[in-house]
Amino acid sequence: MAKSKWNKKNSSNKKQNKNRHKTEIRKLLPKKPFPKKIVHSAVIFILILGAFLFLKNSSYFKLEKIDIVDVRRATELDANAMLPLYKGRNIFEIDINSIASSIESDYPVIKEAVVKRVLPNRLEIDIVSRVPVARIKSRKIFTIDRSGMVLSPGIKSHDLPVVTGFSMWTKIRTGEKLKNQQLESAFSLIDALGESAPGANYKVAEIDASNYKNLSFYLENGIEVKIGGEDFPNRLKALKVTLANPKLNKDNIKYIDLRFRDVVIGPK
Picture 1: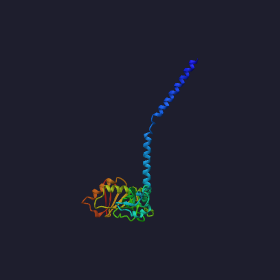
Picture 2: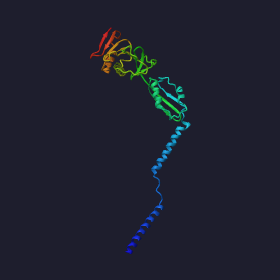
Picture 3: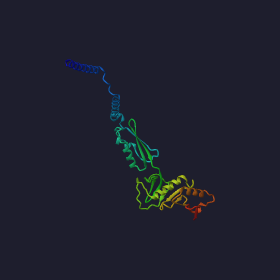
Picture 4: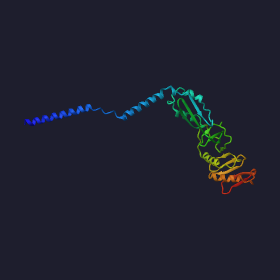
């Protein structure tokens, strides 16, 4: 019995010595290094934060100049008038999207304004102007682009056709976008004329869109061309062939009707 107690005590001492030995070994072993990913992330965060604070607070990035790139010179947008509104502000804190939206809203002739930051202290505004394709006649004559946006009456557009047939009471305002079936039919005809014009000497002066299913247009020499409401490209090709005929007495023509299989010419 005494021997058994001695064995248990001896075993317990051995376990304690073993555990003490393991603890001493762990103390002697070097500690595990801090995970590299965490270190890298911390360094990157510090660098980004430092760069952000530098960009935000440095006087190096305070706005000093605005440049406007307007190839067509379609607007009177003045960089010198805009500069006092933003001068001295950090270019990274300026809301360039808001500036672009404001310009597009204030100047209907502008299709798109792209505002860019140019380091270190400059803004560049690239202007994409609307291209007028016709004039529209109501109580006044306005210029419109292909989307139906009404542009300023002062835009030079004397060489563009006038789209008529609208009620004289139709209210048209600069900056308004018109959308109706009459105008859409006129646009389709204008597109076709761009692809297949009647000829170098036959300029289209007016498009009558009063009946969008049965359009007519007038050449500068006064000849009416009845083209209907469909198949514009092929009908314009037939017109071009007709006008190119050297035997045709154009001074004696009142109208040319393209709505049938054969071209019909009405004399004066």
